[in-house]
Image (cartoon, rainbow, N blue to C red):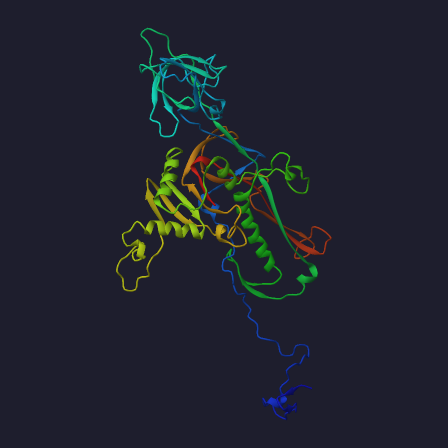
Length: 477
């Protein structure tokens, strides 16, 4: 018997609330149930991180294990790190050696029989520039002979003598025209364009939710609202909704984060049931053959000027969207506000219409400086269960060119316009693997096996194609 204060428990003849008839601990099959809230409280708000590819990409079918495409190389050719045969400064002719590193895939090559990869031909005129820091030395010359076996070019200077290049210097060479004497044959050989050939392979992404038949017989209702718009009362399928949302997030994050399995790696040696090929995700591609800004965010116009100068050397895409984390977003806002004479005091950010009920806008959605840059928050970079708060390998933002580009699709065998960023999924007339879901088991209406449970299966087979990665920018620490 419990004791309340100085009173012993004494039953009351009437239903009167007294200190002497109050039970502090009474369990008769939970006769008095606690009040409960039927609806879940959304303590973390919208928990999904998928949105990036929906905004910038498209989805299109593919029926092969391998996706290949060709991207244009440069129209003109420039050779760097070239060396001179002599440095006396009195030569009127010279031999230039072009290192093999100057012959990457994508550079035009000559079809002249004796000229191999060297795209410089006899009769062409070239500009030579000293690569020594602070130097202003340069020459212009005409090509008199080419030796493809030795990767050398003989030239005759238009100037009276060679510029006095430093003995250990290297030079940059590019073609600006040609000159021939009267009545001579035409140019020997022609230039054949070289394309960049890229490929990617789809990966199979799976997930499963299951519930036993016994649990399905015990109905417990919960009112829910989920990020995909599902509302109302559910019982055992509450977790199925979250499995579906989690799977949809993985459809995007796998395309962003995937890396190919390197030769000799543990993943490459893995055996079924797991895959062992990997795929080229957006971050991998941009880090490998795109542009990378490292060492903190560009927090001043001078930083973005460096980005713009880099874009000038690439595709010069007019409009670009920068998907950023919260810190990078604030850095851009502060940088733009500082351009205002009152920006340091924080008094006139954004639009100001002198409304007495106006809320001060301290953010910007974009700016123009040579190109149009639009800013968008990317939840994936902020989410603490994903990339938010990482120290090693942190990424602060990704700049994606807007619009589409024309590439030669080697599967279709023709030129096709494609978004710079898009997803290819496996599909045919009889099988569509973009987003498959099916139910197996012997419960919940399924009649496919003897196992006493219902299993909801999810599957997709897809790859992300990043076209023109040289137009992308990755901002990382």
